[in-house]
Structures are given as C-alpha cells and as structure tokens.
Image (cartoon, rainbow over all chains, first blue to last red; front, side, top):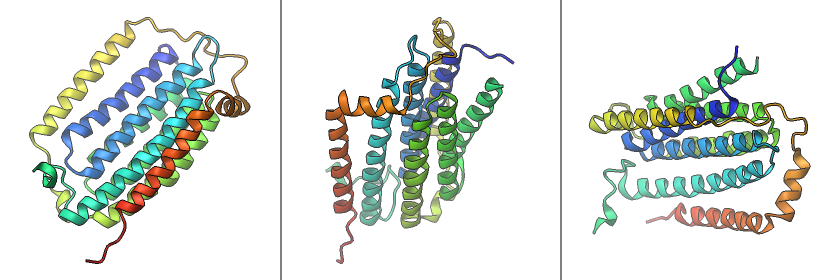
Amino acid sequence: MNLLEPLINYFILSSALLCVGIYGLIAKRNAIRLLFSVEIIINAAIINFVAFARYHDTPLITGQTFSLFAIALAATEAAVGLAIIVQAFRLNNDIDVLELKRLRG
Amino acid sequence: MTDVVFLVVSLLTVFFAILALESRELVYGAVALSLSFLGVAGLFILLDSLYIAIFQVLVYVGSIAILIVFVIMLVRREKWANVTGGNERILGIIAAVLLFSTMTYFSLSSGLTSQYPNPTAIPNFYEIGSQLINDYWLILQLTGLALAVSIIGALTMAKFENR
C-alpha cells in the first residue's frame, strides 16, 4: 500500500487538524472548548515543524528544537487561559463567551 | 506497513479531535482531547523524533489534560449539554471544509517532494541539547521566564478571595 509523498501526507493531516480547530473557534461558545481548539491548532503547527524538518534534504534538528519551544509556550498559554476561565466563572457564574460583556463599557 | 500505521493513527487523531469538540459532556471531550494528543505523539514517533513524542506525552497528556479536567470540575454547568450552535455551526463547517479543500488542492499541486524518505543519519537527542545550549540559549532563557511569569500570573488571577 502506497500513499502519496510522506511530506504531503503530513501536511494534509496538519491542515485537517487546523480546520477542525478553526471550526471549533467559530462554532463553539463554551470557553473551555475554545481552549481545546487553540490546543488542536498548536498541535497542527508542531506536526508541520517536525515533518518539514524530517523530510528536509539534509535531515535537520532545528524543527524539533523549535517544537520544544512551541510545546512549552502552549503549556504557558493553557495555564493562563484556564486561570482566566476560572476567574470569569467566579465573576459571571458562566463561561459562555457571548455572555462575558463586563469589559464592554 | 508504515503507511497503514500512519493512516490509522492520523484518522484516530482527527476523529478524537472532532469528538473533543462535539461530545455532549465536557469531561468526555477532555478525555478525547488527550487521546488526540496521544495520536499526535504517535505521529512524532513515526517521524523519527522520539524526544518530541516523549515531551508531548509529558506536557500535553500529563499536565495540560489534567489541568483542563480539574478546571472543568470547577466550572461545570448543566446547561452545556443542550446548547447546540445554530448558524455559527453551519458557518464553521463551511469555513473548515472550504479551507481544508483549498489547502489540500494546493498542496497536491505544489510538487512538494520528500527529499530523503529514509535518511541514513537521523539526528539524535545530543544534537537537540547542544543546539538548545549553543544556538538558542537566549530563547531557552526567555521560555523559562515566560513559564515563570505565566505561573505567577495564573496564581495571582486564580487566587481564592473571601468576600
């Protein structure tokens, strides 16, 4: 069984994950689901980093190094985002992003 | 053989990603999200980058998924079981399908080729370490600073206040 070029396979997979994440960002109103979508999009980006480094004409390690940084920054983003969600729930008793209007003035 | 494994793992990854967004109960969504992260870790193993796979399992499945489950326990509401997005949902599906078909079309017609499908010398862990210390030491320090700042910020924001 032979598929396409491996690089194109990985690119199509990561674009599928990106589209799932964008669908979640558009369609969902629950703040935690929006965070899920952002994490899925970051994963798609990391897959691209590693795949393009692996199939470079001389195999590179830089893609793996950069994906380490990306994973670490995704962890910080998740921590701060979850803290914001907890605080918003404490203030509004809900995490519907359409109902969070306190900063609107 | 590798193609079959790739196909199964990637289909599972995308399926669990969709399930994470579409499951009725938010906790099941978190479990599906961590399974999707595990699938991405399997893809990293297929890409000969074992270190990234270990890091992915440690950080995503080990800490981020657990953190999300605890936050879900804190902020759970019953009303989310019956919320079905109407217009936004159709709009999101249309946007995702359009974007995906465009990206697939252009990537198939782009003529990208894998130069060395089976390289003889795959870079190993030592090179990651030496590159982190020698070339990207400043980014490493800044990443540590960002981690510290984010933890302090999260603690400050989520601090329990008796009012």
